[in-house]
Length: 72
Image (cartoon, rainbow, N blue to C red; front, side, top):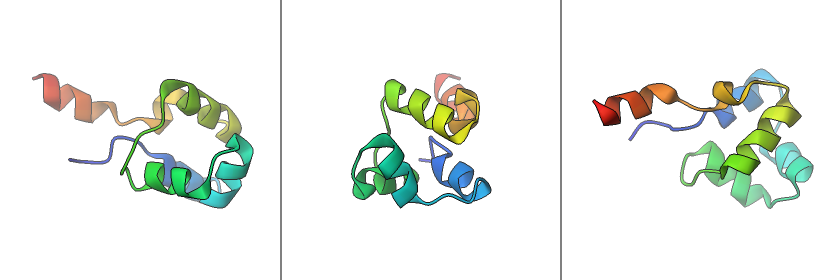
């Protein structure tokens, strides 16, 4: 399965670390690491917070192409 979220990519573009994001969200660094490696996915509320913190659109964090392929 391809990556479902682009959190790792956006963090790199914004020159931010997993640790920094975990501190902003008040979650463990391992939680953010799992999101960045797509081992697990954040819930919608967390995605909305991440988008706000990183000053990006919610759609920038999610790979919609993946869902398109699954429904075809």
